[in-house]
Amino acid sequence: MEIKYSKKKDLLTVFLCGELDEYSAKYVRESLDGLLDENLTSKKVVFDLSEVSFMDSTGIGLLIGRYKKLKNFSIPTYITGAGVATEKVIELAGLYSIMPKY
Image 1 (spheres, rainbow, N blue to C red):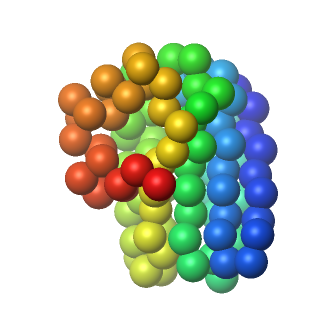
Image 2: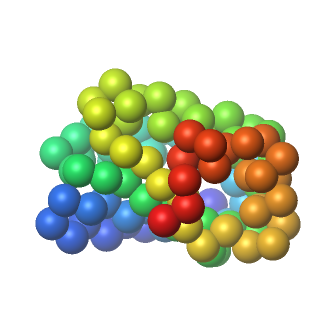
Image 3: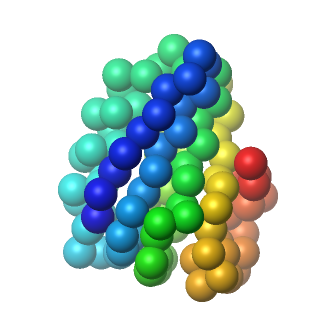
């Protein structure tokens, strides 16, 4: 799993690349928490999942955890670019109800 990001004005876009599963969760969680802590002045955060090749329930839990963290700072969180398989997992989990499509 690789994590890239782009900061333009008040928008932080986080690009997740690879498999978002139990194996990668600890690394992703630690990396994202550090990145988010450094960018708490952002007005919105978008998670770009266009390069995610696989995501399971661990990935859903990881995204929900980052959503809760950002919600404490009143920073809205969005998802963009989910592929067909990832989109299905997101829809089944109801994740779009708290993290809308961007």
